Amino acid sequence: MHFHGSEESGSIPTRVSADVAVVGGGPVGCASALAFARAGARVCLIDPSAQSHRLGGEWLHPTGATILADLGVDFARDHIPHAAGHGFAIFPKGSDPIVLPYVGGERGIGCQHHLIINAVQKVVERTPGITALSGYRATTVSRGTLTVTSADRKRTVEIAAGLIVGADGRQSVVRQSLGYESGSRPVSYMLGVLIDARSLPFDGYGNVFLGGPGPVLAFRVDERQARMCFDVPADRVAWVRNPTELLAAYQNCVPAPLREACARALAEAAPSVAANQWMRRRQYGRKGVALVGDAVGHCHPLCAVGMSVGFLDAVALARAGSVEEYASARRAGGRVPELLSMGLYDLFVGADAGSTELREAVYHTWRTSAAARRDTMRLLAVRETRRAALGVTFARLLVAASRQVVTGAARRPLAYTAGAVAGFASWAGWFAREALTN
Image (cartoon, rainbow, N blue to C red; front, top):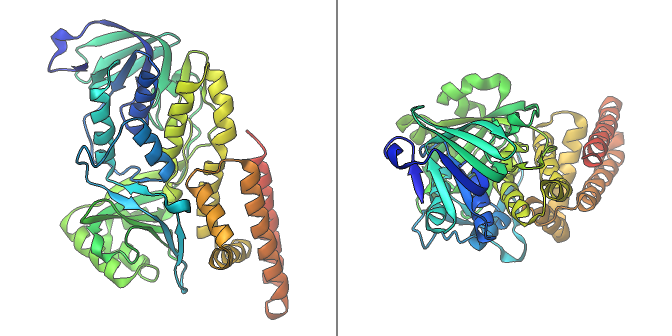
């Protein structure tokens, strides 16, 4: 059953009761509603906005794709344009690419963000037990009660629910109602453009180009198109408004066919732009009110873990006996993807000696060790979420980088070697500080 804010306002009751009220009609909110409905709960889903084409998550790791399939989402059945993803191809500056396939032949999904929303909303519409309030926005939240208002502010509905779930993103109203600080830290900007997919060097893979002002990610989203995303440093926001300067800044790391495809696309339409922010996943809610997805925390999208982590939140919450049980489980399982995302981003953009040497050690390890490639992809695909596993991988890289520096010390200035050692110590301190705390 779907109620709409202005078109059918006369048919909407002023009071609604449900077992669970989910605030947010994006992919994670819809997944939460589906997970609870399949567990037998009566769900009210509040979707505040009409469909938009904003730049959002468009790459689903196999973990996220599997969860959606288990919830009944079938991109092929519902004729949602998409493409299969086989893993990642990393392009270090000045050297051959490194291919990192998903383990065991698993497949991810590339799909435009608004079409992923279409896919999950189609299943919501077919699922008994879910009432959707489209065009409504949460205005007040308290334990057991949620008040929502239509977009034209002419209609208010009070929802009584045993559990309120905040799936309303970075600026979550539900999070604010709990008294949690936002704490988001700006990282960079992401500029996205749709290009001809035939320009991709490794078709079927997420192509990651390094060595420019920021990483560049390109991947197929359907049979014809690929999404190309430029990570723009926060102090270079002018490039967002000047495509010529943007392409010139990244010309040494992006292959000519891709640059040409981008130039053609930017000449035809303005790019999509989003701010990249980081907020640690620390607070998951308390009795009667829970948070999932970006409302908990968020990180740089380079590793594309956001939606998969949000879907894991959704199914864990639906299975848990309480918000406290859910929070405990996700603190244990949700920290590693966040650490991996921010760690890899900082590593790839770092210009200091420690980051440079550690980055080269990562490349060498990936090139020479099938086990390292497998372990990396299990972490990246959110199949492995144990902190110990990430710790072992990180320690091995530090050891390899240290050996590399010691071996080449005689050929390098003493100041460089000292800087690299200091950088390793800084990285080790960061990992110990972040990985050992909740």
